[in-house]
Image (cartoon, rainbow, N blue to C red; front, side, top):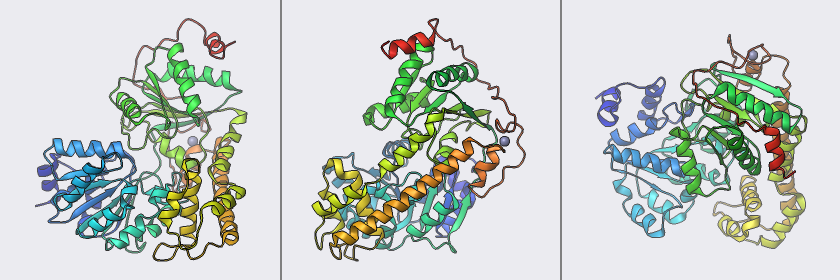
Length: 497
Ligand SMILES: [Zn+2]
C-alpha cells in the first residue's frame, strides 16, 4: 500500500500537504527527524499516520499542551481510531493506573513531560516496544529557546533509558543555535538526523512598528487598528492585568466581542475562551504569551503587540498566528518610549538572585540527595527558582549517574549557579538588544527578521513600514462601531478620575 492509500484509508484525506510525505518517509525508514513546521502546517499527521499503519510498537508523544492532546485523542476516537489515549496530570490516580495497565493496547499515547519523569510509568514503558518518540514543541528542550521548560530537561535521558527509539522533534520556531541544542539534548546525531525546516518568512503578513507617545496614544491607535482591520485579532501584552484591563476597555469602546486570556485564569475558562475565539464567537483576544501555542485559526487578520516582546523568536511565533489562510494580514507593534525597560525587568526577575541561591541551597541541599528529593523540597513560593536550580545543577554535572548529588559543597555550588544565572541573563539581554534594534530598524524589517534564522526575504510588495508599506486592506468586513461616548472619558472613568 502506498503512503497516499494509507492516508486515505486511515484518515480519509486524498493527498498530503506539502512536505508531509517526505517527512513520513523518513520516519518509516526509522530515522531521527527534526521538523520545523508552521503551526497549522499539519504536523500531527506526521506521527499519527505511522502510529496506526506501522506493524507494531507504540508511538509516544510528549507535549506540554494538555488540552491539545485531549482534543486530538477525542478527534481520533471520533474517527474510529480507538487505540489512542493520553496520560497527564489532570487524570485521577485510578484513571492513570487504568490507562497504564493497558499500555500494550495503545498505538498512540500522548503524555505530558512530567509523566515521563514518574519512575513507575517509565518502568512500564520500558517493557513496551516503542516505534517512535515524538517531542512536540521541541524548542522547550533548549535553554536558549524562548520557552524553555525544566520539565523537558530529562526527555533526552529518558529516551536513552527507553532504548533510544527513533525520535521526531517538532517545533514551529527555532534559531540555528536552538536547533543544535535540541538535537544535542535529545541525543539525536546531527549527521544522521533528517532536517526539515520551513521558511520563517510569511510574505502575506505586513510588518509595522508604531512609535507612540504613551498610553493614551496607544489606545487611540488601537481603535484605529480596529476600525481598519475588522477581522479576528490578537493583542499581546506582557502583563495579565493589562490584558484584562484592555479587554474591559475595548468592550466599552467598541462593539467587538472580546475576552482576556492569561496563565492566571482557570484552565476551564481558558479552554472556553480559546474555543470561542477559534469558532468565531469572539473577535478579539487580549492575552499574554500564554495564548496561542497549538492554536490554529486561519483567519486572524492582525496581531498587535501592546508591549514589546523580549526576543525575536517569541515575536515570530506570535505573529505567525496571523493570516494562516494566506490572505493579507498584519503585525503591528505599538511602542512607547518606556516600553523597553519592561522586558529587562522581567528577565532579571526570572532568575534567582545570588543571595536567594545561597539561601535555598543552605536550607535544602544535603549530601547524597537525589534530584527528585531536592525537587520535592522547595515550597510553593520557591518552586520556580528551585526547579531552575536543580536543572542547572544537573546540566553542570553535580548529580551522578544514580541521580544523586556528589557532594553538597554549598559554596562551590553557589558560585557555579551564580555564573550560570549570569550567563542566562546575558543571553536574554542580548536577545532583547536584537529585538530593540529591530524596533528601530532603518532598513527592511523583514530582511532583518529572517536573517536571524539564516534566511533571506527576497521581494515582497507589501513588506514593512520601513519599505513604505501601508496597513493592508483586508477582506473581512464587519460593522464595528466605536461607541459614542469618547474613549478618553471612558478611560478616565476606568482610572477613577
Ligand atoms: Zn521591508
